Amino acid sequence: KKLAKNKGKKKEKPTWGEPKQNNKDKTNSKKASSAISSLPKPEFVNTTPKGNKKDLSSTPMADAYHPAAVEAAWQDWWEASGFYSCDPKEAEGKSPEEKFVMVIPPPNVTGSLHLGHALTAAVEDTLTRWHRMKGHATLYVPGTDHAGIATQSVVEKMIMKESNQTRHDLGREKFIEKVWEWKAEYGNRITTQLRRLGSSVDWSRERFTMDHMCSKAVIEAFNRFHEDGLLYRAERLGNWSCALKSAISDIEVDYIDLDGRTYLEVKTHKGNPNDAKGRYEFGVLTSFAYPVEDSSEQLIVATTRLETMLGDTAVAIHPEDERYKHLHGKFVIHPFNGRRIPIVCDEKLVDMSFGTGAVKITPAHDPNDYECGKRHNLEFITILGPDGSINHNGSQFEGMMRYDARIAVEEALKEKGLYKGKEPNKMRLGLCSRSGDILEPMITPQWYVNCDGMAKRSTDAVRKGELKILPAEHEKTWFQWLDNIRDWCVSRQLWWGHQIPAWFATKKGEEGVLKTDMKNNDRWVVARNEEDAFAKAVNLLGCSKDEII
Image 1 (tube, rainbow, N blue to C red):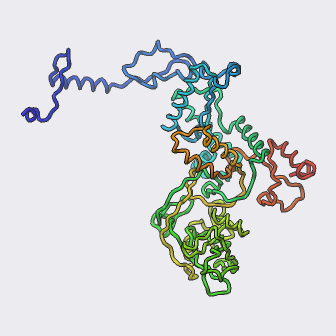
Image 2: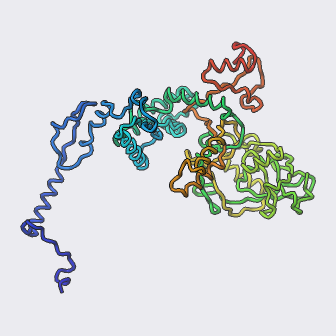
Image 3: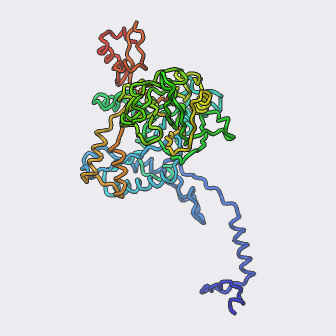
C-alpha cells in the first residue's frame, strides 16, 4: 500500500537542524542557484612579475578551485630560485648512495604529452623529490628528441602545403633552415606541458638532441665505437621503408597478421584499378611455373609476393626429393628476361611436404632466401628503387610501383600460360612504425652496431640474479629479444638528424672509385671533424692532402 501511495518514489530523509522546505521554496532555490552559476566568472589575470614569488594579497579568494589561478606564477618562481638545481661542488662530497641522477626519456619534439607521459613523469618526479628531501645530490634532467623521421615528415608536408615544393626543390641547406624555424615556433609544446605538470627538473640543463653538445657527444661515441670495432659499415638485407626512402631498425617494425585474402590501402600507390576502393590484395599464395631449360617440363613454385620473381636467381629443391632428382644441376628459364636460373639442392630451406616442394629464391628481397643465396653463392639482384618502384632489372615492368607490378606480372604470366592460380594464405606483414608503410627487405649499405656483447651482459645479469625483472613472466620476452639480437642499423637516409661522421676518400685523377661499390668500403674514413678525416685519408692513401678530393 505504501508503495502504491508514494508511486515508487524514494522518501527524502529529513535534514537535522533545518526547517522543512516546501516544493515552492525548493523551486525558488534552484532558480537562484542557476542564476548565480550562469553569471560570467571574472577572467584571472596574473599580476605577479615573471620569476617573482606569487603575490596573493591582490587576488581575492575564489569561490571554487580554478587551476589557472592557483597554479599561475609558481613554476616561474621555482625555476628562478634554482630550487631544482644541483650544486656540483656539493655533490662531490657525497657517496654514490647519496647521488640520484635521472634523465627524462626525451619525448619527440613533434608531439605532445599524453596520459602515459603524465604517469611516467609523476613517478619520476616522486622519486626525484623523495631523494631531494633525503638530502641527496639530486638531478632530474629534461630534454626533447629531434625525432628525425617524424619531424622531417611534418616539415615536408608544411612546405608542400605552403609553397607546393618538395625538400629536393629547396635543397638540403634551405630545408634544414626550415626545420629549425619550425622547431623554434612549435618545438616548445612539450616543455611547456612539463612545466604545467610541475616536474622538478633542472631547466638550466635542458637538452635538445640536435643541439651542439649532443651532436658533439654523438660524434665522439660514433668514433669510439668504430675504433673499438663495434661499429662498422656493411651491405646486408635490412628493413626498407619505401615511403621514407630510408632504412629503419628492427625495433621500428610493427607486425600485422593476416588470416587470408585481405585488401589494404597503400599510400605510396595511386590505387588498384581493379578494386573500388583502390586497395591491393595481400594474404594470397600465387602459383606459377618456370620452364625447364631444353625441356617441355615445368617447375611450379608459389609466392605471396609475386613481383619478387623478377629478382629470382634460383629455384631450390630438397636433395632427397625423388620427384626432382632428374633436375639436379639443371636450369629453368626466366619468362620475362630469359635469364638462366639454376636449380639448387637445399635441405635447410625446402620442406618436401609443403606445396610442390620447389621454392623460388630471391636473395635480395627475402631473409630466408638471403641465407640460401649465401650458401650457394647466388647472384643478388635488387629489383626495387628507393621509392618502391621496379628498377632496370624488372624488364618490361620497369617504372611500375611494386604492387602495380604484382598485378601486371600476374597478367603477363597468364598470357604466357604459366599462371597456375592463387589461394588464401595466412601471412605476417611488417609495417614501418613511423610511416605505416609496408616494409620491403632490401640489400643496402648501412652502418651497424654490434650488439652481441651488450645483449650477453644483459641476459647474464638476469640469469645470475644481479638484475630482476618484475613481473617475472616478462623475463621470457627479455631473453627472446636479447638471445636472438641482431646488429643494430643506426644509419638513416634522412636530411634532418645527425650526419654520419664519415668521409669517402679519393685521389685526384682516380676514375671508377664509387662510394656505392662495396669493393671500396675501406675508403670510408670515420673521424671527429674534417681536419681529422683529411689526416686519416692521407695515411690511408699514402698521398698529400692536396691530392685528396
